Amino acid sequence: MPIMLGYLSVSFGFGVLCIQKNLSILAAVGISVTNLTSAGQVAGVGVIAAGGTMLEMILCQLVINLRYSLMSLSLSQKLDPSFTLPHRLIAGYGVTDEIFAVASAQPEPIKPAYMYGLIFTPFLGWSMGTLFGAVAGDIMPPAVSAALSLMLYGMFIAIIIPPAKMSRKVLFAVILAAAVSILLHYVLPDLSSGFAVIISALVSSLVTALIFPIDMEERGEEQA
Image: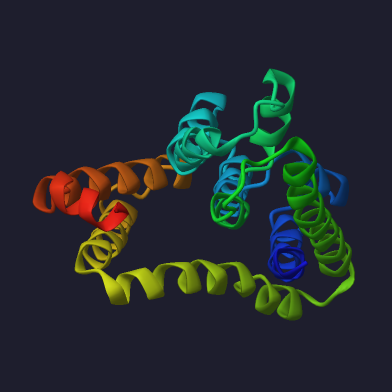
């Protein structure tokens, strides 16, 4: 329920954003129903609004959502033997940062019924919040809609700030990504937002990995 309520409020901003980008209410809800990824959805809507190509959309979503594949691989080690391939495919659809965190913290092997219950309420919150936001954005004055659309950016800031305060590596990656994004905006103004996100993420990740390589011995001690 806490995840559901959090998703309900944040996805409201996504619904408003879709209306601002001239998407229909049905399209906004359809995106949220088929994609449980806030950052990926926002970037995807940007690509759609800019008239980007399908290749651009695929690369953008691949870079932004690659972490979900890694989360799923990690979570697969905790699944009960009753988790057959069809169950795994369905559950993989609902793996998000928060759902992964809750599921991975369970001491017992995870069964399909538990995973479906964990996914269902956040799914409802995200979908219904998008619907409410899209409907509200369609009838509210533009100034109010613009103010409410800032909710999503507030969520991204809230995700970035805590780990950046705890780790200089994360802080470096965040600052570098922002710097590359600003540089691309002024040096290559015709570059679409989707490719700008891809380039910023890749450059920031690669440079940070080179400057701050992970010490495997230290990581093993932390996990232990």
